[in-house]
Length: 147
Image (cartoon, rainbow, N blue to C red; front, top):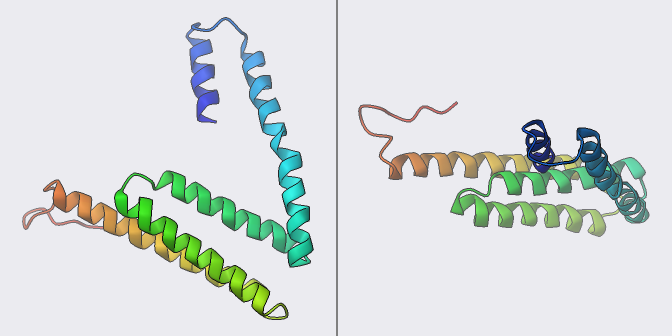
């Protein structure tokens, strides 16, 4: 999407020789390629989880995990520790689900999601504090105030 906005901006500034419709159609066709791939993944996971909506939710959690890792990869703590934590939580969910197939699968997925959210918030909070302390933005006269 970011490349699409850059290409559209370049078109508006007349730096490229194709029309805006060609740019939009090109990126729409690129996005349509992923529809059969995601559909295939969903139906493949449906065989394991035996529920299409639950499979969709697992794919959604995995996708959100990847988005969070891409967005928060600006600090070394987020780059290493966050990836390890989120992978461990997601692995723990799968371990529980396949060890106890008649267990509380929705509760396990919800708990996994909450643990992932907690890990993201904690590493984000720590990276902001460390960055502020190392750059000397925090001292006795101007303390760090987080929500």
